[in-house]
Length: 113
Image (cartoon, rainbow, N blue to C red):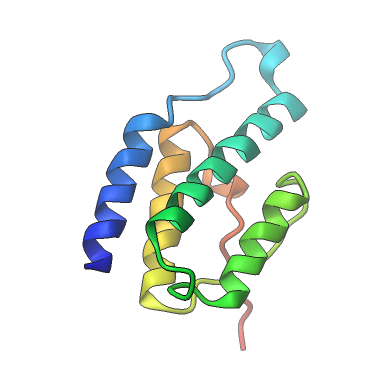
């Protein structure tokens, strides 16, 4: 069931987030960062609406929320620990790539233990 939700969410996000790469030099820089952050926040909201409140770990949720709250400017380590969290990270990555954001924008990383 959750796999179907993730697949549907991925399809919707890739279809609804338009290609958002900057079209002119004046669109670059902080404006593009703000635009990417807004797109990421929208994609994150879509994912959260698709899942139950307890489906994702508190750390995964709070790290994503912190990344967005800081305007996606500070490097926040968002570490997917469960299979579902990894699927969500994949969905967000695909949605952002579809919108023209590079992987270096994304917050996903896990510290080595």
